[in-house]
Length: 93
Image (cartoon, rainbow, N blue to C red; front, top):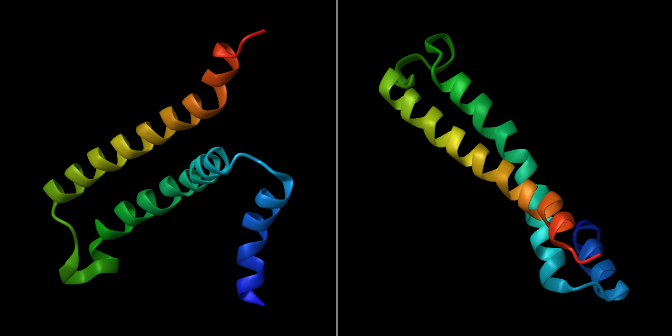
C-alpha cells in the first residue's frame, strides 16, 4: 500500500502527459520549502548546552553553520523566485 501511495504522483504525471523533466524540477523546488524547517531548528538546538550536554556546538561552529544555512536558504529563495516568478516575466505575450 505504501509503495502504491508513493508511486501515485509519478503515475499521474505520466498519465497526464506532463513534461517529465519540468515536473521533476518543480517537485524539487517544492521540496526545497522544507529545508529551512530542518536547518534552523538544528542550529538552534545544537547550540544549547542544556539539550546537547557535552556535544554542544562551539560558537565558531555555530557561526559557520549559520552562515552556510543562510546561504542555502538564500539560494533556495532565489530558486523559488527563478522557478515561479522569473518565467512569467520572460514568457512571450
